[in-house]
Image (cartoon, rainbow, N blue to C red; front, top):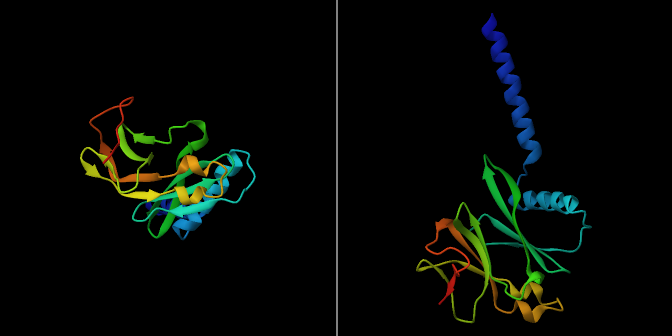
Length: 174
């Protein structure tokens, strides 16, 4: 008889877990990013300004461009059992420095970043060419559009060990 009570308790806990999972996840990655963006805007005590959402092809990342001041928030989306969850992976304040190259490391491994890449060149790390997404067109209406010319977002398929550590540049443009 006691095992019935234990089974009932385990069943109830499983149901509660599934209901909580359904509450914090969304049906699509886009909905998950919208939910995470609303949460982050509320936490930053900002009003919902018009933002541009950019899905990075073949990656778990979605970029959100916030105007005035020019910032890029990087959301990482995880999908499990048909449900998606997004969280803020990084925020990049592009207006803070004339150098727009930003590198995001996770456990001393490269995951993504931004770099100014001249026309016809590519981002290369440890001899491997990384996928890139051009960003300057998303800032064309900004009064600082000229500063973002040839700005790219690059990312790795999985965190990549790097042979150099900052302050030396990790990313080379070849």
